[in-house]
Image (cartoon, rainbow, N blue to C red; front, side, top):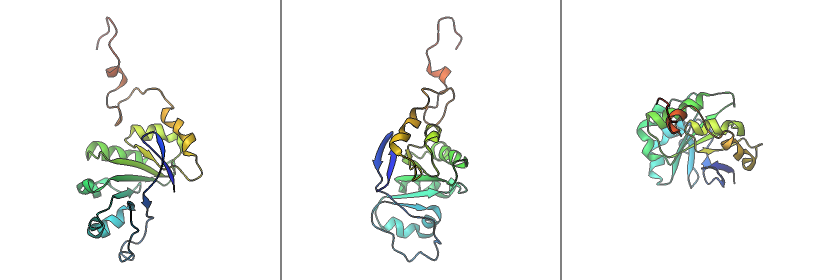
Length: 175
């Protein structure tokens, strides 16, 4: 069973991640039982059949996918994931903020793909609360990436107020 970081803890991952497939050609295949994390194209092609299963569902978006494609269906998902095809591809950060801030998604938001420990702090600031690291990385050691910095100046998804609004005013200081 794969290990992930969820809410600052390393845990076993009970979700089955389905790879990208030809959704039209594979529509007749029966997905495995249990919680499924499936690609956007599979969700779009098999929405009604998947909902009829009555099991936990999640969708993963590629960096080029538009989160608007699932905005109307967010209540059906226990988990959303964003795939980082390369650690240098930053589009997933924007997708996370869009899901949290524009569409109000409050469920688990997971970073998958080429995710490294030095990205975790900034990923969390954009709204991710779970991380599936690359297979060659140790999740226990990567936890330090979540506390790489003690505080931040700017507001973000996980802390909307900037630092100057969070600290108490000093005597004689203008607010």
